[in-house]
Picture 1 (cartoon, rainbow, N blue to C red):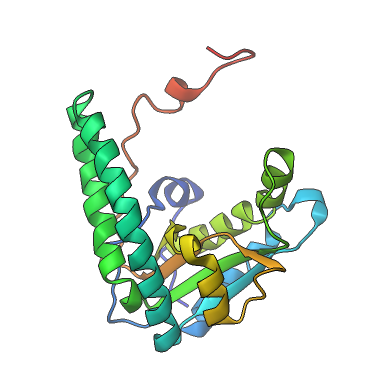
Picture 2 (cartoon, rainbow, N blue to C red):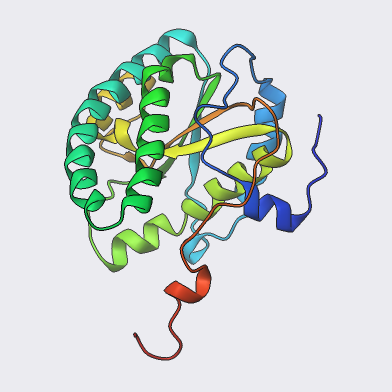
Length: 219
């Protein structure tokens, strides 16, 4: 399989949420997905539980069904986000402009969700409806493994995006994919596809890590 030959630094700084630059007309080989998925089970897992499960969706009808659920959820989310963006614009116009670009990109993905070549749904056993320690401990068993998949995909010329909007209708998605809803929680929906170009750059983050890091006490 083709690799880009990126350094660890490049992979960690250029793995972006890819929406507008997904190639909807190029399929992703199943073996390439399997190769990326091999990295998921090498990630750390809470209490060595290894309860991770991944559902890969490439069937056109099932992608269309998930796409419809996503669009329904997007309509709800976009309305709430538009209100928040309006408030943010008065405080920081540059940040609001950036957020508007993100919203436009997300809207594009929502409109074309059914065209995404592949979807990967990370799952955990049980229902994640607890708070605090229980929820964070559970998520510690799936988020690192899914991120490993996304990093592996980047090195292989694939773009990914972590989405959760379909979870507004998780039970319907479970029925579509025959996931036992009462026994298994879906955590996200990762879109996957070859990218239009591979020249992704580090993101602009206000102040970098120093701006969001405290030492020894909160300040």
